[in-house]
Length: 231
Image 1 (cartoon, rainbow, N blue to C red):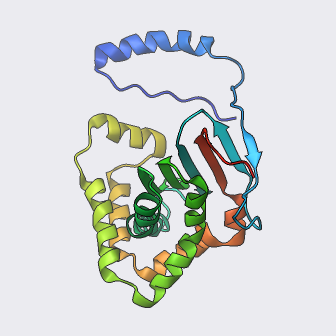
Image 2: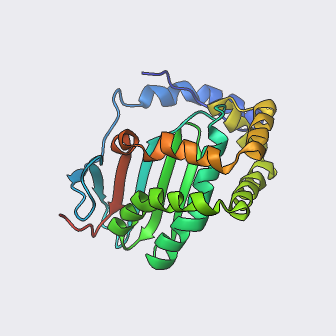
């Protein structure tokens, strides 16, 4: 296993205090990690071919929190920029309409982060419908191959640029450098790749990282809730 790394954000006095307290904290940690109870369920109305087991975590909630995760690429990869744009296109133009407006969930998301791609919904009354929407995103994207809306592509880019260029607290900048090694030079390289991304790049990374049969089968799916229908 990888060694533990710790990050502190504070003034000099606080860092000195944390430095003294850290060894005591680490000595109190249990030798092994804990776990949570999960149930494995089948997909019911969804086709079972090329699907991972569904992990259900019963927390007694009246609504559910649904997530599906795929292995992604590092922030420094040339494919990271088109993956970010792909996720923004799905979130803005498909998931919001199907999961939030039609399905009644409080929210939904598609996010590409360093090494990970996630689809999710929260406070969701129709978890199985949401999983079907995740699956149907491939069909929605294939329908965009004829129109290739430049407006949708530019809106996706502008949303990412807005977050990329927003003022960042020193703690956040330090966290990105600590966790991912992302400095100003790497951020500028990423900006250039975002500018250069076209629809062909979006379709390519979608097939490579999301919609191939092996990718779907190796993804992880979980529902946290309390009213899940057993099949």
